[in-house]
Length: 520
Image: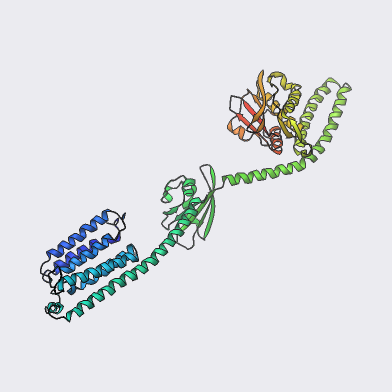
């Protein structure tokens, strides 16, 4: 029953009222069968209109209403029946459901049908004569009073009733039509506001949920459903317990409450707000994982900037004493110190070399050199790095496959810094290779960039190692064999040149580091 629109339900009610009226007034009309037939007809077309489920908005059902009322009036006294003013209900219904124009049309139809009915019943010589069914509701002499054939003055009464009927019917159409027009205008305004609010909620990246006082969800936008991973949350019971929303709602004593949780490995920031005690609660939340990561990265970059400012001073303060210590130890070694002294001097010299290398890495990172850039061939820089690497002790235990590229690869760079990156990648590859391992060096152009790759057949890296690979002081080498600054400095130099260092590695299948630089 609820799925049918209200005009259909009113017609069913009207059909039932007609049948009850006919049954109760059986002794007031000559026969109730025609009245019951009219009631059955109203119920039949009300059912037919209801089956359309509102898919057709037409004036036809209201025309049928006027015709049905005219038939009912004909068999129950026409002008004698006070139900003649029911035409106003059909006109008002058309104005409210369709438009004021439709309401006025039904008012015109109803008034015309009533005048036609009276004319065919009482006119002296109508083309079609309708019999009059007297309604014995009032004084029996009223029947004679209504008969204009007996007294021409009775037309005044009939015309007065027709005028009253038209006033009531057209007034209902105009009044309800104006009211319906205002309601429709307000409804359209509300629809526009609703569409705007709906659009706002749908495009917001933050999750928004309106929680009723009974803890059920009145509304949840798409971002909320996506963030919490529940397609259609109905209430608190549909939420993961680790969101701690129920606990937060019990702690909401003021207008706003902020709290943070973890969900699916992501950081979530929540805000609960309400306008009055016991009213609905607005729950807004968002994923702050990337924001936290960016904040941590900014803090890290700030630390690196501070390190850059301090690096030159640190290198100077450490470098000078180291040089003096190395010179003293070398002088003792040249003067022929006793064997037991030499056994202690040589490890010290190796430690001094290692400390000097750390100082050099820090100095290279901190040293500004943007003014010394120039256009150079990347192949020439690779050759310089290979020439230095071949002098290195670690190059003796690997096979080097490094054909010179035939194509000119111009880049805008500081030559010694790019050589430093390539040399560092070569040394790392040699450290990763097993004894008699293999290193391949290739250079070329891809995607508009100059790419220099250094690949090894070593042990490779897992995901955790790759994630921390370019962090300062992070190393996978044995203690004493690496400072953890090589790749960090290399990546920093590459970024300063507008490039980057990429890594492709898999556990047990070796690694490939690629230096990408903008091609001039």
